[in-house]
Amino acid sequence: MVTIDPAHLVGTGGAIGALCRHYLGSAVDVEGFPLGTLTVNVVGSFVLGLVTFAGLDTELLLLVGTGACGSFTTFSSFSFDTVRLWESGERLRAGVNAAANLVGAMAAIGLAWGVVALAGL
Image (cartoon, rainbow, N blue to C red; front, side, top):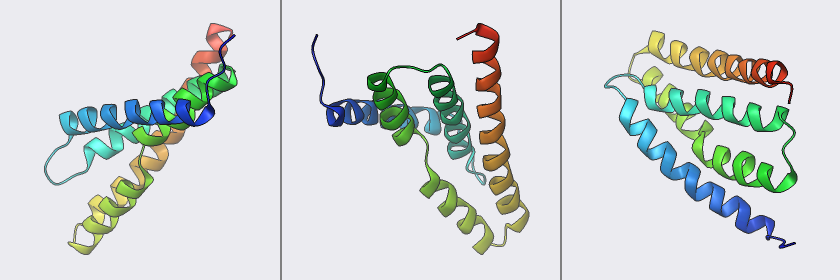
């Protein structure tokens, strides 16, 4: 059996996640609201929930969970976007962004748990 260095798994997953984040985030982003960041955070939370609740082996968790989901989701962009909206006077949008990221990510994790439970994994 071939053993792959954990750093290579995380790095490979990270490269995949970063590319997916760029393309998905760019495809759905809109002017005036960071929809791209919200989308990748919610989708990434769902995927991370799936792979975690499904009990994948350590190598797949490193590749998909730590690597891909780690680079796909973005707390720093979410924080920056929220502060930028607040400072530009868009206080309601800043609040909606903060709430949508938190509630959306938690709901996605709950949905992932439900999917895994229903699938019997």
